Amino acid sequence: MSDSDVKSKRITATGSLSVGPARIRQIQLKTASGTPRLTITDGDGGSTVLDLDFNASTTHSVNIPAEGVRVSDVYVSVLTNFTAATVFYN
Image 1 (tube, rainbow, N blue to C red):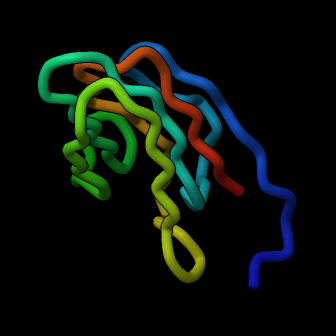
Image 2: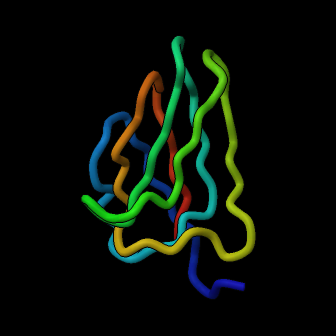
């Protein structure tokens, strides 16, 4: 079990969340029309750690099992057909 507080950051575009080393614990998002897709990498240009497709025009909650996905920085490289997303991390 992690011993630090969970924080969150809302995003509406691609790029770094600028949170430094973190464990992604959950993602909540609202999709628009089309074919929504979210891709998160381990920092800018790093390896892909999450690559998810979603149904259009609905709200989704993605729970990451165990201790979450560890990254050097949360970098959203693809955010297609989304209104917004909130990433929970610690």
